[in-house]
Image 1: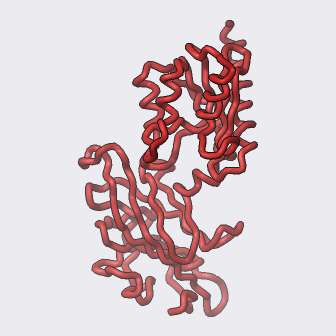
Image 2 (image 1 turned 90 degrees about the vertical axis):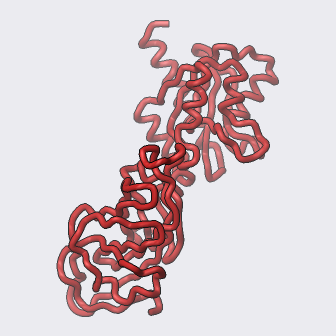
Image 3 (image 1 turned 90 degrees about the horizontal axis):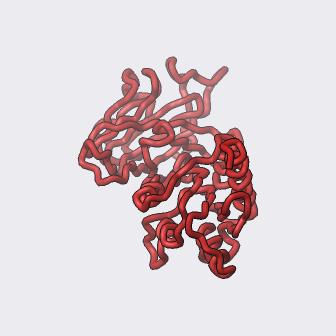
Length: 302
């Protein structure tokens, strides 16, 4: 098959997989297609059959048809699972066992416990791996964003999250709620050590370390802290604060899974808890995040 024709066929199957994903009503919308050349053998999407993943559904359909899958190609909008914590056999193992020779992937799992482990397992089994074209990767991301955003953003006046700080530029966005235009803070985190992490503000005046504070209620006025630095080092148990014209988000570091150079075992993550304190300016205009603060009233019941 000429390269250009092959590229067109691969694109068509990848697009079909994205279409399958959009058929799903699951919060983790994933679609899969198994093909040989330009012929589609089977398709599947998460939720089509209760309790099964998209790749598993497509494989089961193909086997029911008696199809020989040796050397066939599978297209999936999200990398196959590889470290299932249940009794199920991970999809990556099922794919390899079926004899699939090539897998095209629309995106990698943002879960820090899973990220690219499926890719690695397939590679180690000698399966050729390709990525979807850029525009179809965006579409695959749109299909699964209700699932993937759990690892890049969170909402609520007080809550918590666990995410991989080496992905998404270390950005984790915290918002008051999920409404469009809701006050939000783009917190950024970066590697520091086995038991500490940097909270990055990008410039002085944005972030501070509430040194020695162990609980949020020990911090009276967050603006009284020192915002002279731009990336305070926070040990496990420490509290960092990011401020904006909306107010403050107080973040406590609960746990760290460090990178390999600091003794990590492969999974990388930080677990945080947060509390939002909104400000209500008294007087004309909201204060700028890099200038002196106007007096304000806390809106979190304090």
